[in-house]
Amino acid sequence: MPFLGFIAVIVMVPLMITSCASLAPESPLVIPKTSQLQHLHKVALSASVSELKVRYARDEASILPAFLGIAGPFIGLLPYVAGEFIDYGVRSSQDTMIKGQFQDTIQGWSISERLSRYTIEEINKGSVFHLDAAQGRQPSQLISDGYDGLIDIALDEIYFQRDGTSDKLHIFLRGTGKMIELATGSVVWKREELTATHLSHSISEYTAGRGHLLKEEIDNLLHELSFRLASDLVYAQ
Amino acid sequence: MSMPNKETFLIGLVGVHCLAVAFVALLIMIVAGCARMHMEYLPGLEGPSPLRAIGPLTFVVGEFKDPTDNRVIIKALLSPPALRSTMEQKPGEIVRTAIAAELVRNGHRVLPDQDAEKADVVLDGAVVDFKVTISGAGMWRQKFEPTVTTTLRLTSNGEPRRILLSKEYKGVAEPFRCVLCPSAWGQRDIAEELLKRALRSLVRNITLDPAFLDALKEINK
Image (cartoon, rainbow over all chains, first blue to last red; front, side, top):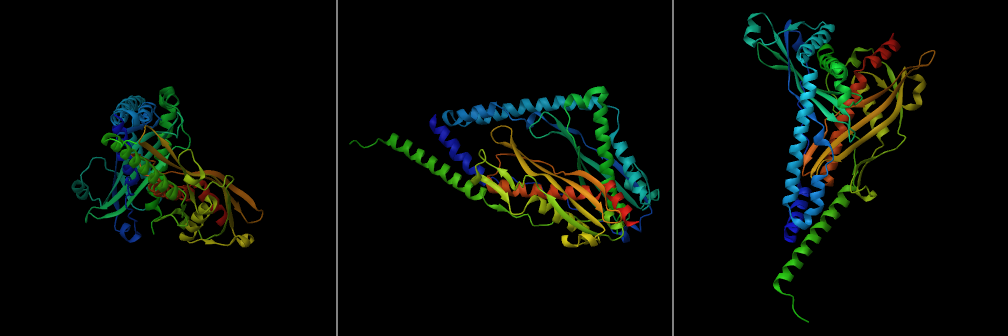
């Protein structure tokens, strides 16, 4: 048995030293040019929202793998791995339950409709082009309806994340804005934005009073995200 | 004296190998951990900004105080000084340089500190946080979370001289999670990149803030 412990150390230490875990690269930015935007007179906008994610229980320091880890060098590699798997499984199911709670709270409250409306309002402040919503319409249909461009606003992620080691959560929204010139299919603008709540709150605070705080915080972030994405088109040179 | 049998010899050999691996790992962590970070870059802010729509102003970007003078961005193994990654520059200086660069990129002039009287606007503040927190969940799972927060004061140099804005801003970057996470030098690269992203977000949050833009427009009237 002690040999397994030694093997664990011999295998794990070099793996950690040579681990090539690295940050995912950021999405490339396409800066809009006035010369390109001038050709676009009538533009449609569609918004899409991905599924809500929660990382709360999984980010909490856990005792089980640590306990088995201490015991590891004496009883082998297997308890480490087993502890991690069990712990991760239990915590993932806890996060799924919390996600269900949040989803129930905001049921019937359309995030994509809000995102679409706020972005149209912000872009229209700049009077860049005529812009209206085109939810679910195909590019070919848009061309025949006289549209020159299509703006696609995608809320790639809406996730709740533990604030450091506290029991509170921050809300993060990560969205991408992209504009295509329909005639050529070329991408004339693309930007990714990330916004987060300034203050973190507990699960019960978010869900209390039919989720008043939860809706208010998401709404504020949607406003901020729309404003940030729209500024590229409003202030294009 | 009797010769050790084959089994005892093998146990001894594995033990020596383990010690050697642990020693080399510790040595690498010490060497890599105490290296100093270089943060004298300017964040890659690109694209249009509402700052450009405001007529050219002259700024002095004054001191961003850093009460903690915290240059340690990674602490390892209960944080003995030898196992820390530190930055070459003070966080206050990094924040100041990044804000000044964004103003210049958008057509404004930034004067040296001694010309403060000639400037239209003076910006200064205090860095609240400039760090990456590494928290563990399980033996091999870790989360790297950057926090870049600063207060900003905007003073109009006109007559009368007055503070038009005093506010706290935060830079946001997505945390990095890993299983079987990299060792000290890999952690330093990740922390550096996370801080760059959070700093870029901080500068963008300031320059896209309607309150900040309104204050500049008022000075520009």
